[in-house]
Length: 203
Image 1 (tube, rainbow, N blue to C red):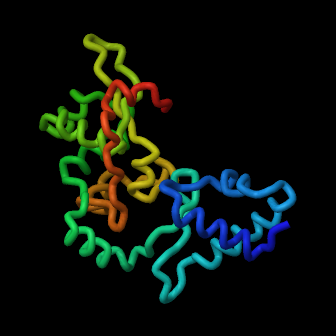
Image 2 (spheres, one colour):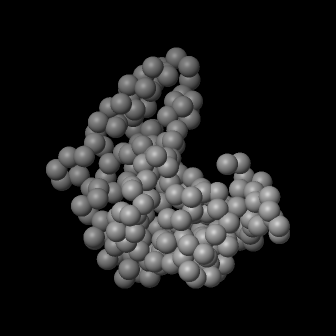
Image 3 (cartoon, rainbow, N blue to C red):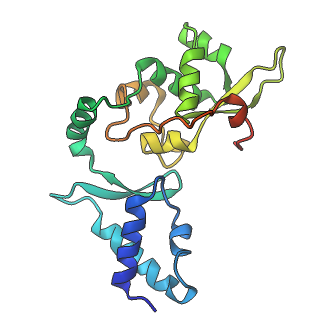
């Protein structure tokens, strides 16, 4: 059997390199059945060690159904400066407006989004699809059968939300997030990803 310290170190390493939030069940499954109880204790110790504390720059948070190591909010201004100086990949206000409409009204069509924004939204939608913040979740059963747009798990990750129930009131969305999600860079587009590839994703 592994020691609690060994398992805690292994869990820390996994969370450090994981590209997305890791569900607790998946983390525990990394260990032999006889070590699962010890792993649960080690995970609790790790979460305690990475809980908010003076002088700490990292915390473990639960988001989008999993755990991940993230930066402490009070240091986000430094991260923002760092990424801006390196040409950071922030969201435009047009993207924020579109995300807000989809998040609170999903599933929603492109014409409905354009009507609410009073602007054409095709270019913005294409960009958000490429960033994997939106997905196509079906078609509206009306004339022309337009695509329906919904948010993705990456959307939750980008804005640090456990689920859509954590969304702030609609009127606070743009004020809360401004033009970007501080300290979190949107995922890059996958080569060749387009609407027809995204449609089979489940809601």
